[in-house]
Length: 207
Ligand code: GLN
Image (tube, rainbow, N blue to C red; front, side):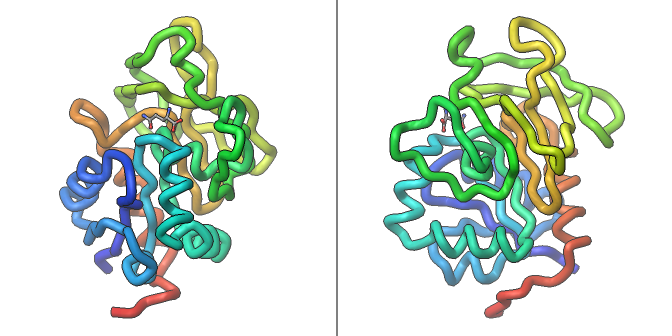
């Protein structure tokens, strides 16, 4: 089965995700409308600006439909701002900041930004052999994770050492960093694509 994987495309680094997913053999489509969401077996929420993403998702009537699909078990993968979008709780968010939720975590927005705007590290990542090169750009970290959440990676060095930066809970995967950027690592997208395939066929197919 060739999975159809959507990339939330109202804001953020959409093109990079589409490229990596296409290179891995998925049918990758930008999602701006419900009709596109309906075709998706899984959804990537990219890096960008989480407050803007929430507002645009509301404006374009995508917010509740995505939330509903996530509740129904559609696999989703959030990177950076996308991680914030999938988190149930946000520290240092904008006053009216809304998230899609689903991941039982508290994320701290712009957590690294207090020390440095961007930061790179080679991380140990559960389930992958060899380090993952991680690029953090005004990234969040996971301040606190509920008991059902698997921690996949933590920062290895520097002032943020030990901070949780990759998690998985059921169908939801999230990284604080950007595996989609140049010099990133496609193995995490591969994990997600495999997960989408294993999760089975789409429930809302229109095509
Ligand atoms: N700081 C951004 C936010 O709060 C996330 C940055 C990113 O996605 N690179 O949404």
